[in-house]
Length: 288
Image 1 (cartoon, rainbow, N blue to C red):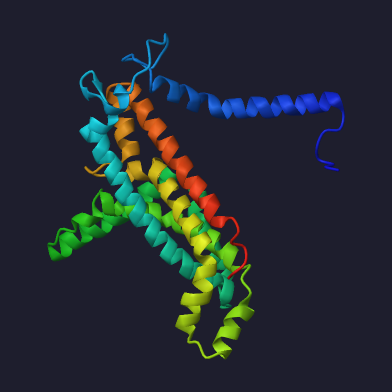
Image 2 (cartoon, rainbow, N blue to C red):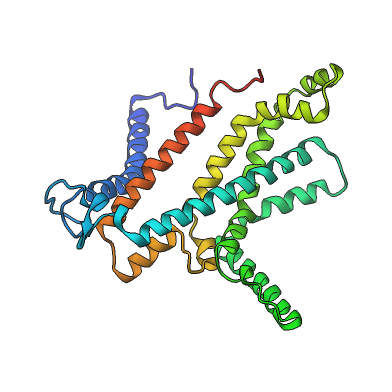
């Protein structure tokens, strides 16, 4: 018997009503955005004027679809590039961190672990400003001392990747370390006793076991990077990612159905990646 579940009929009704209200609260904004993305109106509001796909594929104003909107597409590609780059870096470094904290004992380990966690609790705006100030200080010092212009330390894609990496590597480290903690070290010892080198054991025994966690960490890092706004806003240059492009459009033009179309596209993409992550984890609890 589930002792946590309400036992009386009245409490079950209250519990069911609460859960229904909670999920409606979560789903209502997403549902509204999806509906207005297909409304044949230049304003994302009622009344309903008919079904249309113009906000996705339209080629002329005022119904220029997202796939024909040059600025939105540039923002999408910038977000993809930043997301893939920072996710790959975060998984690589996160894997090293996982082995460091799970397999090694050294002085100051607990302090180093706390320092790794700190970026998760620092507000994104503060993190972005701190990185911007530090990078600008270095760039200005190099310019004044050596008369060299380090443009990569000015607001732009490099700083966005650096800023997102500062907290995404913590997430990937925790995800990968959680799976590495479940690994039976005896499997590695058996392979070593059979004559395999450490590199071969890593490639054929350990990493295949970690593969689902590596993929899941990559997906989580990519999704967080793609939707990140606070840190990115402080570090962005001329090559703005999609979130900043959408914010700029909202400020200058206001809410338009094409932004709803972008939201639907992102919801579908995020849902697909989350589903792939779940499928990758299922049935992979033991090494083969």
